[in-house]
Image (tube, rainbow, N blue to C red; front, side):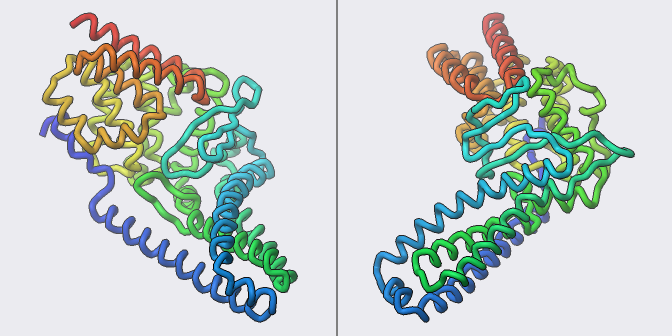
Length: 392
C-alpha cells in the first residue's frame, strides 16, 4: 500500500479503542447525571422542611431561578478549576504562561501579560504553566494536573457547609446547592480518566504521566515549547531533541504522541515539507494515540502540502472530503486552518476573490492569536502558496 493510500485511512485510534471511549463517556455522563439527581433530591428534601423553602419550591419560578444559578455556578467553577491549576502549579514551582476562559486568553509574551482571543475545541478554559527545570530527569507533576479538580472539590465542600448553615434561608441555600452541584460535575468530568475524541481530561493526563516517564517528559517539553513561543522563538530554532519521535511504547500514549504532532509543526515551520508530508502520512495511517482534533489539523497541513506540491486534484478531493471540510469550518479560528483554505482557494479553485477574503480573515485572527511567532510562520506558508500559484 502506498503512503498516499495510507494517508486516507485515518485510523488514529483503534476501533476497539473508540468503542471503549464511547462506553466510558456513557458511563461518565450517567454517573454525573445520577449523582446530581440524587444530591438534588436530597437538597430539595431538606429545603422542603422549612416553611419558606416549601413555599419557594412550590413556586413556578423556582426551577428557572435554580437553573440560572446552576449555569452561572458552572462557569464560576470552570474559572475556579483553572485557577486551581495555577495556584497548585505556583506552589510546586511552576511559572505562569497563559490563562484562558472561553475565547478570552491572558498570555505572557515577552515578559508582559496580554489579552488575546483563542478557542480550543473541547475545553471551556485552560491554564498553562511552565514547569520547573528537570531534577534527575524528572519534575513534580501531580499537583499541577490535579489542581483544578482539588479546587472544585474544596469549593464544593465549602458550599455544602454553607448550605447546612443557611438552609433555612431558601435563596442562599439554593445558591449553595447550585455551587456545590456544579463543583461536583466539574470534578467528575475532569477527574474520571477520559480520553475523548477531542482532548484528554485531567484525570487521563495524570494517569498517563504517572504510568510513563516518557509522557511526563512530553508534557514538560510541550510547556517549554510554549515558553519559547512566548519569547518569540520559532520552533525551527528550538532544541532539536525536543522534537524527536516517541518510542514504540509511547505510540499508545496520547501525551507522548503529542511530540509527533509538535515535530510536524516544527517541520512545517522549517519548510522541510517532504519530511512533513511523510510524517503526516505515517501518523494518519497508523494506529497511534492521537486525538481526532489533532488529526484534522494534521490533515489540513497535508492538504496544504499537496496543493503546493503540484495540486493533484484527485488527491486533494480525497483529502478534502466532506468530513474534513466540516471540521475545518469548525476550526476556522485557527490561523493554520485559514492558511490551508487560502491555499485551496488560490491554487485549486483559482478564486482570487475568495482567497482575498480569507487573507483578511487571517489578518483578523492573527491580531488575536496569542503568539507572534506562529503568525510569522503561517504568513510565510501563505506566501509560499501565493508563489506556488503564480508559478503555475
